[in-house]
Amino acid sequence: RMTATTATSNDPAAAAAKNDAITLDEEKKSESFSSSSYPSQNYRMVALDLDGTLLGNDHQMSQATVDYLRTLHKKGFIVSIATGRTASSAIEHIDRLDLPYSEGEGFPLVSANGALGLRVLKRSTPPCSVPPSPSMDTTELFHEPVPQNVTIKALNLAKKLGFVTNYYIGHDIYANATTPSHFTLAKKYGDLTNIHHVYCTDDYAAAMDRGLPSKLLVLCGNDHIDTTTATLAQELKGEAHVIRGSPPWFVEVLNINVCKGFGFQKMCRSLGIKMEESITFGDGDNDIEFIQMAGKGFAMKNARENVKVIADEVTEWTNEEDGVIRTLQRLEKEGLLHFSNN
Image 1 (cartoon, rainbow, N blue to C red):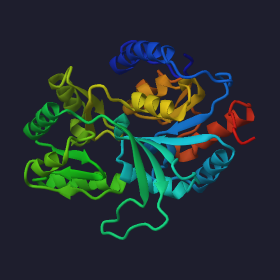
Image 2: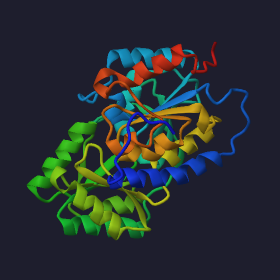
Image 3: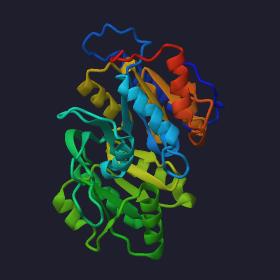
């Protein structure tokens, strides 16, 4: 794999990423999709991370990005999103893209870092509610929540460490905030993703009665990110997939069989797309497998070094410079994108 950046041999994160690449490259080789008449260099689909990738630092898409992705969709090129966010948080961006789909289809969305796959279709008459409910109808394709024993263990660990946890169920995020710092970090996360927490005081009992979480997110703050990641990874070793958050002030806990890459793989299967016919863009630790498993995986110029080292290529531009669409425009000029409507 070619990369625009090399990591030093004493970088443990980069070394771990390289070791993981071996397993995931084997996974890519073992794919058994139906045969396609398109050569592997003709990409049919792009999957985009949101924060730090598709979105600028204001957490919005530029108008140039919206316009170009609409053009690609019109030509028959598949545009999708793969994010750590909830579906309801991603839907505002899908709504802004406003890509037309036939009834029964819908925008391909991988949410909760690969735990949940959906097709999203705009409602003709959005419902009225406060806070606003999603203006889209969703069809669930797959869901792999965190098991109950791991959920209880992770919640107790976070509580012992003094941190509040986001509990993701359906379109809701529960938080058992009890201190000013808990509420500050919860608000910070709400501002980042434009969500409204369901605050609880029952140690998540009502949330657990509703069902198992798609994921858990421990809000630890920037100063505790590395120690919290290490502690959770050690205590949940062999039981959960623990990811250092991006931006780096939270830690995510997923089903041990879940990552954004495997969620994207399931989405590709549902669309009849080979992994080698896909392009992905990302910037954070949660994007590593997602980038590795695609036919062409891009790390953003603003990505962490351990993400850049496993990518096929690093973009010439950051998320603030519309790096995603400028790279796609280059690939289109090189004749590497397949348009089914041409």
